Image (cartoon, rainbow, N blue to C red; front, side, top):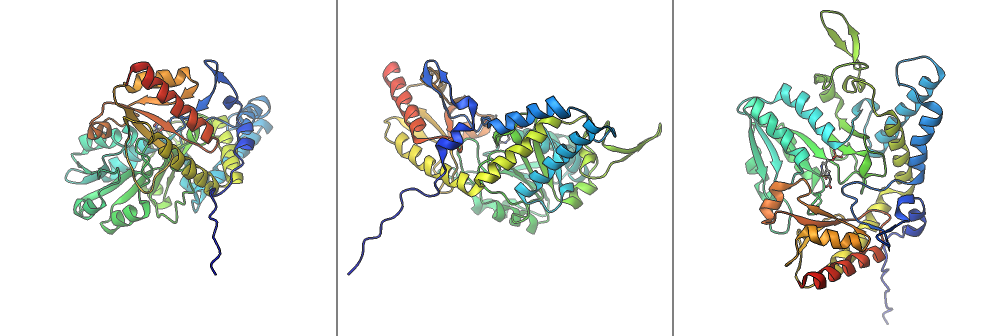
Length: 418
Ligand code: C6P
C-alpha cells in the first residue's frame, strides 16, 4: 500500500504581514489606492529601526569620526566602525580591512577602475564584461579602455537571458586582466554562476569584480566561498539609507592599490612635498564619510540577518514564480528573460502600450513600477526594445500586490485598446 505524499505548497514561511508592519512607507494610499511598491531594484523601502538609527545618531551622537577625543566623536566612531564589522560578517569577508565604505555600487566600481585599473591595465590587455551589465559596471571600464588602450570584450547572451558560458574559455586569454560582471541582472533577473566565472577568470590570472547591487540585498553572498576579488554593493537597495554601501576587496589587492580620492582621513602623514597613506580601509575613505548612513546600514544588515537571507531569498523565489505565472496569463505580454536561476526582477512589455504609459496607469492604481531602459541600454538594444516596464520584488511584497499589478496591466490594456 502506498501512502499519498502531500508536498508543501509554501517553502520558508516569512511572516510577511509582520515584516510589513516594520516599513512605515508601505502603509499609504497612492492615488486613492493601497500602495503596491514594486520598484525595489531601484531602491528598497526602509524599516523603522533603520530610520530610527539614522535619527538617533543625529539626535545624540552627531560628530565627525576618527578625528576627536571628545565623547560624541568616540561614540560616532564606535558606531561607524561597528557598522563595518556588521557588513564584514554579512558578506563573510575575512577581515574588516577588506570592507571599504562607499556611497554605493557605482562608487565602489569606479574606485576599482580608477585605482586597480589604472595601475594594472595597459595597452594590449583585455577587459571582459557581459552584455547584461548596468551602465555602472560598463561605462567606467569603457573609460579605462580609452585611457589605457586596452580592449573590451563581452560575454553574450542566450535567448533565455543567461550568459553564453560556452564562449567563456575562448574569450579568456592570458591578456585578460579583469572580468567584471553582475551577480544578478537588474533587467532579466538572471542569477549568474559567480563561482564558475570567477574560477575561470582566475585560471588565466585575471581578477574578478562582481557587481552585487542586485544580489547582496536578496540572497546570501559569501565573498570568501565565491573567492571574489572585488564585490560592490549599495546600502539603499537593502533596507539601508541612500549614500551608504561598501566595496569588498581582497586585502593584498587593496594594499597594492593607490588611493582613489585624496583628502582628510586617508593619509598617514603629509608634508609640503608629499604624503603617505593611512592603513586599510581608511586609505580609501577620504573626507568626512556618510556617517549616519553607514551606521544605519549596519542596522539594516542586523535587520536582514535576523530574518535570514535564505528566508528572504526563498520568499522572493516563491513570489517570483507566482508573478511569472500570473503575468503569463495576460495576452500580448512578453517577459524578458527566462533563466532557470532567477531573482525577483521582472521586465516586460505589453503589445501596443508604451512602457511609460503602462507605468503611468499602474501608478494611478497605486502600483509603483519602473519604466525605461533601467540603465542598461546595450541590453535593451540586444532585446530589440528601447525600454521596458519592470516590477521588482522584495521581502515585504505579497501575492495581493502582484494581483494589483496584474489588474493594473489589464486596465491599461482596456484603456489603450491593446
Ligand atoms: N540599478 C535600477 O533601477 P547605485 O546607483 O550605485 O546604487 O547602483 C548602481 C547599480 C549597479 N549595478 C546594478 C546591477 C544595478 O542595478 C544598479 C542600480 C537601479 O535598476 C538604478 S538605475
